[in-house]
Image 1 (cartoon, one colour):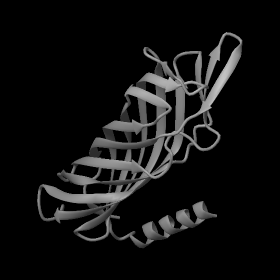
Image 2 (cartoon, one colour; image 1 turned 90 degrees about the vertical axis):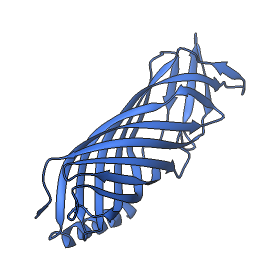
Image 3 (tube, one colour; image 1 turned 90 degrees about the horizontal axis):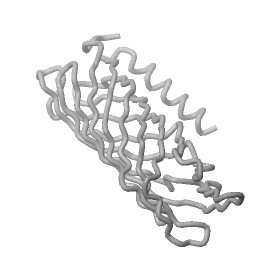
Image 4 (cartoon, one colour; image 1 turned 45 degrees about the vertical axis):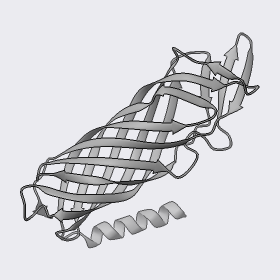
Length: 219
């Protein structure tokens, strides 16, 4: 029900803005994650991303930004707590983490795009992971029950020209990033299996470059 209401609001909003200026583009970025967990520790957890961007102006100072991106990483694990709560070294283990994300932001400009060759402003919004897939490259370790839908808020600064844009952002997840109540990490040693629930929070810093394929035109 909530999803239907959200899509109805978005459809109505976009329809009402049909006379506003809009742009469509492609984006790529780099994200530095800061995952905090008592159950799992990473040496590094950074991600690359690429995706699509749709920009729709409300007026000269404010616009709405819709972005979908796919992010991926080969993170390096350091340690985890085992079934008994003891710290277990995972040095040398790598895990592939793939995310599909949807983000909705609003930009407010101090230097407007239509009055200057360079524009600059601040931005804020929300995002959600549509897909959150963890694949360990070691056969002895497995992640089960990692939830797909995780929401987070975003704030940052934006700047660029008519065709190019750079965004510097900070994001913070609202919920337990690693799991719901059903998520476990499983270690298979010989012929028996041991599992443990995992919990953790995540925030990140990112830089994104967007190239717009269209100029600022009225629809």
